[in-house]
Amino acid sequence: MYVWNRLHTTAMVVQECCFLLFSVLVLAETDEADCPSPCSCSDQYGEIVVSCGGQDLARIPEHIPASVTWLDLKYNNITKVTSKSFKDITEVKGINLSHNKIRKISADAFKNLKHLDNLDLSQNLLKTISYDMFKLPIDSAVKEARHFFVDLAMNPWLCDCSLAWLTEMFRNGSHMFSSRFVTCDGPETLKGVDVKDVSLSAFLCPIATIAPTEEKENSTYNSVSAEGRHTTSNFMFLPLVSFAVLIGFLVGALIVRGCTERHCKHRYKRIPNMLPTGPQKDGFV
Image (spheres, rainbow, N blue to C red):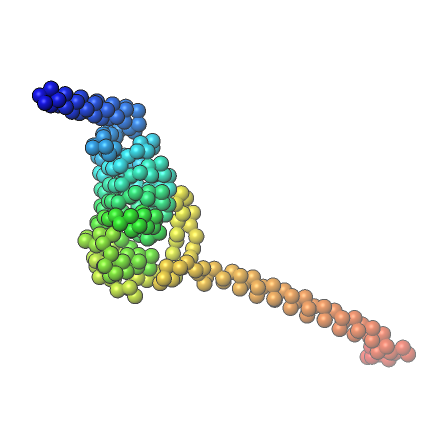
């Protein structure tokens, strides 16, 4: 029995040593081969953590390890999240983008992240977001009975018709999005009001708004209805109406001219018959 216990203890020690050696090898491989500069990478209990916080980054680093589980990008100068920013890290569960200068997030930024559970967008410069950009992560979390959460605190939210869906989620009892410190920065009539307390009828859009595309600043003019549907502004039809009126005027002028010329031809044919043919007296033509 003594010998058996000694063998069992030795086997356990060898197993732990092998596990530690494997962890060190994985960590070294991750740090040296896959970790983007100036980030640091580590293996914490089998989960890859990539830490890029406080590195004064102006953009999201490329070549982030595809196996990353937690990505920390807080306290940088990142201004936008594109459709390509996270396209290769489909296993990620958490992303921290807090304390940046993010103004724009592509509608496809998170479309491949079906394992995403936690997203921190607090302390940025976001004015609006859409529900559709979170649709795949939310659907996956609901299907797998996982908790999904997005922190939206401390952003200058524009409370117009494009943000009405968020208030509706709050009122339906959803806890997927933070409501604390989520306040309106505009329009002026709603400044300082918590988004969750804004009446749905107060989420209005101007008749014409400018909707910049993701990659370019080229703008198109359109109006947004209270339900968030985009419709063409009325003033876009004014040039068409003016053009139609001009065409109608020209056509009318041509018709009148044609009729006048035909009338004149008949008059000139009758003029010779009206002229006197005999001797003329003074004073008569």
